Length: 450
Image (cartoon, rainbow, N blue to C red; front, side):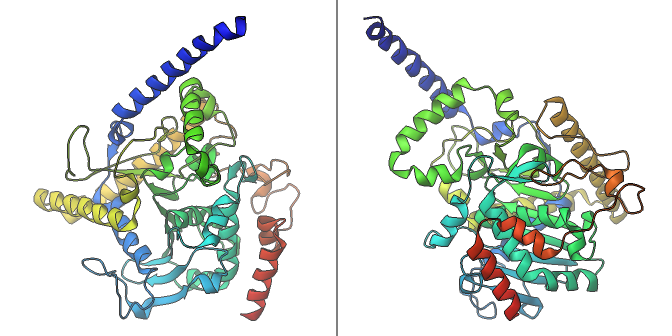
């Protein structure tokens, strides 16, 4: 009898929780998350629309005779295109990509396309993950995306090393959209972590631009690599539910939404921050704000940026334009509009060249200070495995998996401690693939054929 009497009470609690969740979601707009962030400058945002066009170029079969060229073109010189890989070349182990030597901007760009809804292999990459399945550099990452990044590095290691050494003043940029953005972020992590594989490339030369990225790394890694990785927000990094769970539960989506409703209502954000396995959007975040609440249409876009720790796009925004805004062609268009507005503002202000250079130096210093503040905030909030850089400006080295912690002094060249032999490139790839023997054999065969 007591159980029967408790059922209406339980229903009332559940209904109140659902109403509270719906009320917060319906009134919550995308601009609320970034309203306290600083405005991005034209200098720091300039690569975003350009790299979006490079990613769009991956969809073309022949860049000399493009079929889907955006207004203004791709901005690519076909003679500078180093290579282009399709699904046939990657055997479904990674999305298609291009390697482009951008002499105009002194940049070596590896651009990766987004999710292909018609390709089963892309879903396999997304679904190859479980909560806490893969550890990397003291944190957790998406297993399928890391393996795809390992495949790309194994295939292009030699040519990337050659280009990096041949052009010592060029930056190395990994760019991707949607699924490709997760692979690009993993590429940046692996290259920074194992920079000796590419001729000891300096960390400051490595960049990553993840356009509409999936949640692919734990919070401590997302903040630690914010000086390398830059993310442009849309609905996907706001989806706290793991992508593999969304695809697996497509036939019971109402049940999933009900569980998410109760979880968002009852679990405080402080507890979520202390979950070391929870994945987040990587690096520094850029948010293109083009809509306002209770108003129709788009407004002149404004770009805000920050390295947040708490409040890192944890709220799903209810919008009828969520899926269309995720398309790379729309992101490129709005990014280009925002960039044009920034340049127009700078032109009106008539900023002298000397003052412009000083502003770039000030911007780099402010970003560095903001990055350090985010690291300090992560330590203050007791984010698992978060720590501050050493007094020499470098991070302590952490070994993957079950390896013990190794201090900076022990890992630096010329230290008096025990020296460890650096693992070979093949050993690194084998560790990334672990139990996926078929993928490892395919890599070795393709590498032998080359």
